Length: 212
Image 1 (cartoon, rainbow, N blue to C red):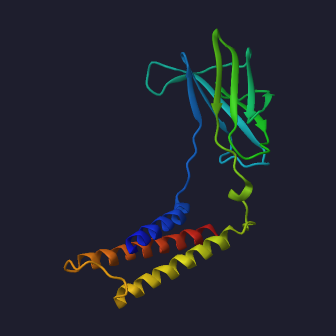
Image 2 (cartoon, rainbow, N blue to C red):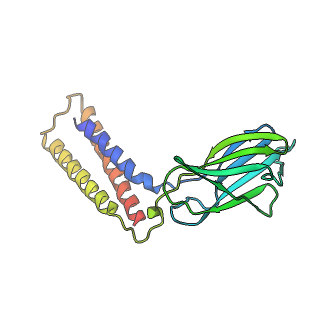
């Protein structure tokens, strides 16, 4: 039972400390014959209610690695539609000064997954594709000071974990919790596991402080 609790503490600590990891964002790229089409948000992470741009990049790769040609006038005979759930809206595409780059202003009104649908004739190549873009998040990722009570919940969970850990250490030291008689190996393993759990909780506290 004590080993199960140790693993649980480690898991809790990892859940909290994962907030220390910096997320990375990327656009989605699809290939249609010789063309490479990339779609995403101009500002990432995209946040609900904040003006953003759906950006597209349409290129044709060259023979040399890293070389490409931007496709101009790509939307002359291609329609673009933004989709969310069962809702859809045809959008106007603006050309960026850089050849092959395009954008369309949008204010996302709901959190979740959006898709860009492209249909038409791209310089003689028929396309009919749907490209998912980065999920839109709530304003909580940018709110300051935080408006939710999530911090209090995190603190309460940490207090409970620390209290339970202290009880396990006390029982182990007093002999109330039995370990196998194998020359102290089980005891050392239990102490090692509790140390890992304690370290995980410390990391969780650090992560919580960094989010404040």
